[in-house]
Length: 145
Length: 145
Length: 145
Length: 145
Image (cartoon, each protein chain N blue to C red):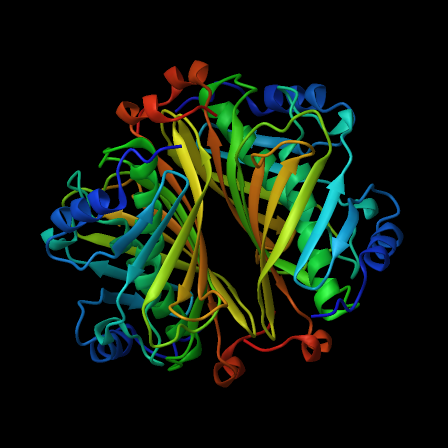
């Protein structure tokens, strides 16, 4: 499968679409997998000194969004329908990396799982499963069931 | 059940703990239910003009945190272990209100569900189920399995 | 909303469709809610003497199926796309009752949550959120997003 | 990590514990991964000719149970606290194989994900994430958070 949007195209789109925030960097996206990174920043810490859960949820969501865009092309209206995340370990004081893997690209839904790891660590901090709804305009791109 | 922390105590704690952010307002918390509100703000919009998914995930997480603190008292190290959210409808351009209901308060885990609604609307925008792990110091407060 | 299939019609259909099993009884279904019951039976016990998790998962799934059929009419090909269940308490040695509530009936997806309780008990044994995909033939019945 | 129970020990235990049912076969279990198989059988078909969702939920649950027993030793009272499954594709008329991978083995909780595939197929039919609670007696075996 060839990517219909490259990682750098997706990254530029995210930066334009969310000018007020600091979206994760899209480091790779090939229509089957995607990798995003979020910089360690003290403003995202929660009591106890760990990176916040919402930071990881947002990162997982963005990694799947990047994967979907790389698979079906520019369809900004693809939206999350379900996100389920397990927080597994306290992150290290380091960048977080999200590796997303496509489980299904159907006509109407795309499902992927995301493993989030502190940069340099081996054991994951969090694991999420994310479902996106594909808008009708993007369905030509999807392979089927 | 009497609340071990009141809504205004929890609200003050959140504002102190997250000085860089704009945490939701805790409007009610009684050890069995909690209600939080997040103000409508354009900076949280995503492409398509809806409030962002991460905003709703963060709101659901905070509503359960408020419920847990009201149930077991000041235990800031209570942490989310699982959050599963379904996005149901595009939110209206309005505040979002999260109503959280306790499903279980065990020795080690607390489970609740959260219904998120646009202020003034009837049908929910999102529904989440959230599990918190209760630190050993807070377990005396919990009633059992 | 009027039910497009009644509880007894759905119940008869389940009994015909699953002749080898013992499907739950559909006690109520009105297009917005549904209630199913499964009889206590020793063959479903797991080590520790509790009713098995799979029994409760199957019950939650059937309760949402009954709700969907009551909402959209006879569409046997409606299929589960996601089921997420939290096991909360050891069930009592009694029938299990599942109360399902519609959270969304869209064109393509229906989402509901299910609370499972031992007959006579107050606190729930399990809570599930279930998503069904509605086949194109059933979409005329659904009200919209 | 060495398995504290072998696949054949776990398999024998399941057959003894569930004499009325037909539990999946445990084909492998090494404390980090486990593989279970369920035979294709017409009695588990649902309308539309597919293997039933409950069959796959039960298979995912058993695969994680086998993994937990191989990791912590004989602790039959380990219980599922959460199971979240996405149904991805209609299974083929063939055996189903569940491959389970450990994501976390903590003192109190074990989390793993399970990929279910029809024997001979490549794309998964279902993907689940399963959390088990480890009884206090089994916690000595677990490595930590």
